[in-house]
Length: 125
Image 1 (cartoon, rainbow, N blue to C red):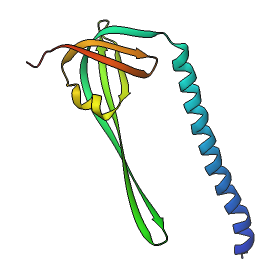
Image 2 (cartoon, rainbow, N blue to C red; image 1 turned 120 degrees about the vertical axis):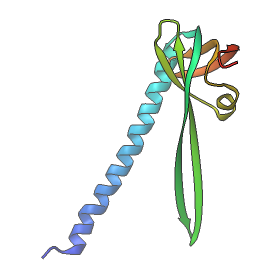
Image 3 (cartoon, rainbow, N blue to C red; image 1 turned 45 degrees about the vertical axis):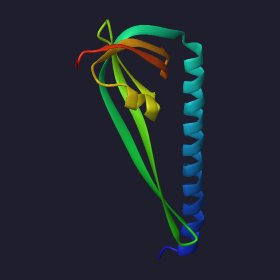
Image 4 (cartoon, rainbow, N blue to C red; image 1 turned 90 degrees about the vertical axis):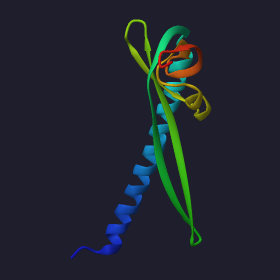
């Protein structure tokens, strides 16, 4: 029979190492993307908005018997440049609300970092 105490001595540190490893990996990935974006030139290109999407995640926390719910929404817009290449960029909620599918304009970005979109016209009108 397996001794529950020795199993816990092995299992708890293993979970701790996995969690800390995941945190370190995500921080390193974020720093790497930030550094990579900083090395890229800032470009302004003619583009058309082809799609928009959101990604929502919900988190529940229990603190001293009180349940706290937290929702996070990430906003993404896909732009198509003149060469027909598509670029999906993460944007803030305000920009997401101001930009519509079919908008034509000038996109300014740096690597995967969105800077600005200046609308020229909307093909839906």
